[in-house]
Length: 269
Figure (spheres, one colour):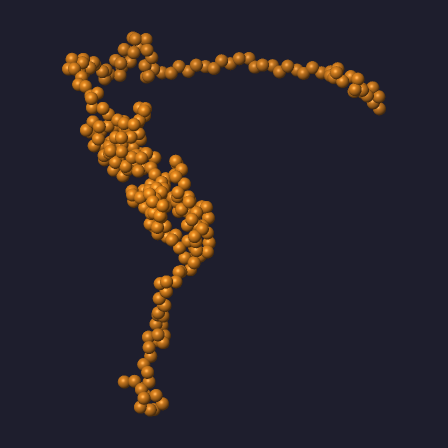
């Protein structure tokens, strides 16, 4: 029961949680419509060149992982720069729309005048699936293979698909020591011919020497030097050291300047 105030019958109010000592103070809920201090600073300060380049690298990785075209709003929302000042956003959009050959971001202009363009990752090769790889190899005018590491830049399932295509004879594939595809070429099934049995028999009949000493003697008998032969150390020729020619003493005069220069050596004190 609460005590009365000044002996009257009116009870004194019980202390609230806010007035109790040691009680945590309640924080005011921030206004949802009001920008935070960080957002206000972003609006006031234009981004530097280094900051834009750093954001570009993050945008490249974002588009590479998405593997589809994205609009400008999606990108800036992911980068958390939607509250930046208009100058920064305009500069950032201009850099992304350059469409230079070495840029990793490709800009697709809108099909209509009022539409919005899209952005997508620009890999080294325009290959994103099996059909793209087959068409690209058919258009090649040289026999240089494609590195699988470069194909993985824009094609997530490159390794598994190339391994399958190599097994079915659609591609010529070189594998590394770990069994992963390294380089690929186009393969033509019509050029795959069976080797006659007599040639296969002759090939397997060739005896490979397993004894290194016997192989060494065969090479010596044929006049060839085996790799196991000891290297001969050829001593360098030591010639006689050249003697320095003593410089001739005496007086040297400039004949072409005799009329200009005068010799005062005879009047020394």
